[in-house]
Image (cartoon, rainbow, N blue to C red):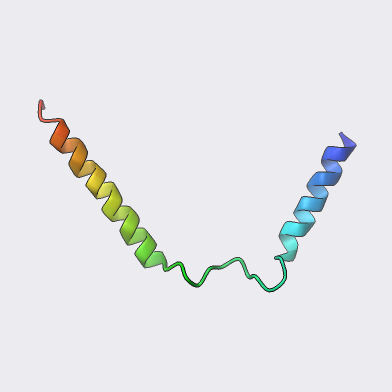
Length: 56
């Protein structure tokens, strides 16, 4: 159990340091574009589902 605790402490320390020059935020990912794409995809799935479920 000591090895698990040591590994956990090491990983927690690495995660808190931030990894040098990387801030953890990707500037290339636009949240509005990502959310809009996800909304479009879910609406497309909803439309496909309702096309195949005509017995209601």
